[in-house]
Amino acid sequence: MKSLTRRELCATLSAFTALGSIAGPARADDTAAKKSEAAQDDQNKEALLSTSHTFAFDQLPVTHLPNGGEMRKVISGTLATGEFVEVHETMLPAGQMPHPPHRHRNSEFLFIREGTLEYFNNGNPEPVGPGGVVFTASNVLHGLKNVGPTPAHYFVIALSRA
Image 1 (tube, one colour):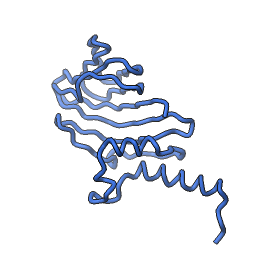
Image 2 (tube, rainbow, N blue to C red):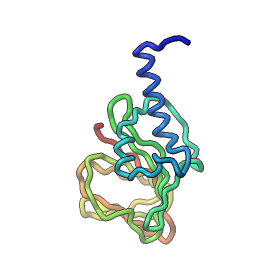
Image 3 (cartoon, one colour):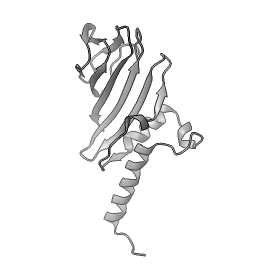
Image 4 (cartoon, one colour):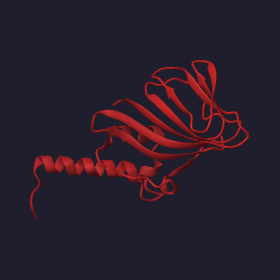
């Protein structure tokens, strides 16, 4: 067996880290699956996303939310260029909000696939529908509500410095 150079070892460890952040836990009873969401987010921020992938929508892990919605996590981690990125898809039931208006350090893009939403931009309501895009700048008060009669589906891409 050939011994690895330090460079090859670092590249191999980075690849395993990236694969682990994408694959998630192997079994529902896996101890990693029992970590709190905050601890998992911290771990994901440390994951180096240095390889390319495709993601089948029907194979994304589904999280059932208290408001009756669903979230499908796509990817989360730090890019090789140093930025943190997190991508997920959300189904928001009619009349619901994912959470109260809030602020956070990262910037976000929302890509609306289906539904009629009201985006609260620093206290000002703005309508957005299918094909619409929302940009939320860092530390701006914002919120979202499904004001339509059907579930809304949208993708979120969050970006920040790692």
